[in-house]
Length: 503
Image 1 (cartoon, rainbow, N blue to C red):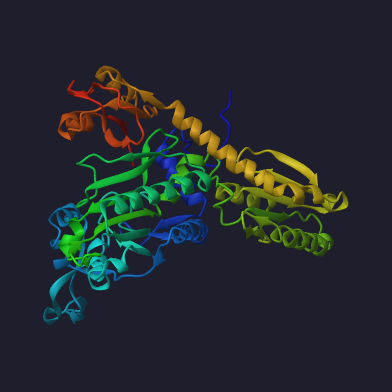
Image 2 (image 1 turned 90 degrees about the vertical axis):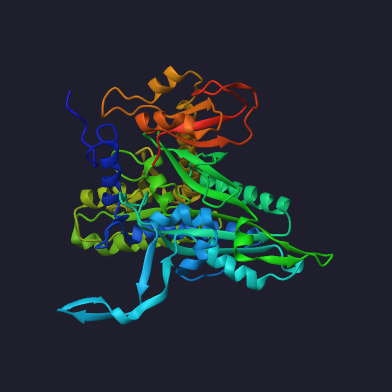
């Protein structure tokens, strides 16, 4: 039996990492830049990020946060104020040491007399520079809570990079807040964690597990780090984002103090939380197939593309006119509060090639309009999620387009949720654990999420981590506290952890 031809080669089954790279390329999302480890996000990929920004920005503002912007450069002395913080990021920092170039032997080099008095770090995160500003803005309990968010770029030096998943420079959103009490700060941490969960599941159609990071895995300088983990189609995990309770660690480092109602001087309690362009990589790996990208309609840059089908030149004007009319009618329809986004592809290329270019880009609905469709007052369309092809009367199509898109959104989430549930296993025997994560060959996709009792001593699992490339992802929230034996050392513990191979 001959193998079915796919638009993407290799397929997921043949070589999942390379399949991912080819989907990103064929969907025209991004490409590697001349600067090693960095990427150029192309218009279709950036359109996805713009929608992520738009939705999340609205959600963040509705919780009382205001947007601001802070410098790209952080004085080295600021990082040094928080010992755990600087140690955690030291190996990833890009450092500026000079402020001017000069020509020497025909080449541009840093001018010897332009060395900075203090090196500047290109921000790996902004806790310390924002903390410096908070210390100036906060004087009294009346200034609290202070709720700030910024959309920015971040630089963390990476040796092994992969588009969207791990790059030296990436885009993100980072929230930073200051509170009068520990309880208020902790409530903020969980509030934002649940904002992310709602966004992931309702807009990206990606189910997530909320959890707490272990001591070795938490954010440098944090008291506690909470995260949300998602499962990809190859059963590996992606950390979608984090929410950190920083206690008074950073407020003491940055001297962020306030006078309370009784005039006593106290340190504030702070939080930080964020998500990155890594979410685009997660969308690719959760939803796409061997023919390319599949996008949830709510986050797609364009919900519908219309392809004029012209066999005779004399019909061009009439067909284009009908396509424009359909586009106008569709764009007057509200889709979750916004006008539908519709494109007409008028590029002068073969119809089949044009259609497949949109299939690979993952546009939810592809409409083809030819002379016969006009004569029948009908619309012929293809659903990208399941390749269903259908012809409806134009009015019926206009009436049903929102339910069709909503059905696609729901089906994508349900499929991803089944993948997560089917491949999350309770395992409390080390032999079974090792077997679960041991593929029979290099091509086999093996494992998933193992939910196992764990004593929280990360040293106990170092050999397993090294041998199996498995890490503890999180301690799921709201788990039962039934006591069991740690899967590695047999100590009694009430904690269970999610273990997985991860990106």
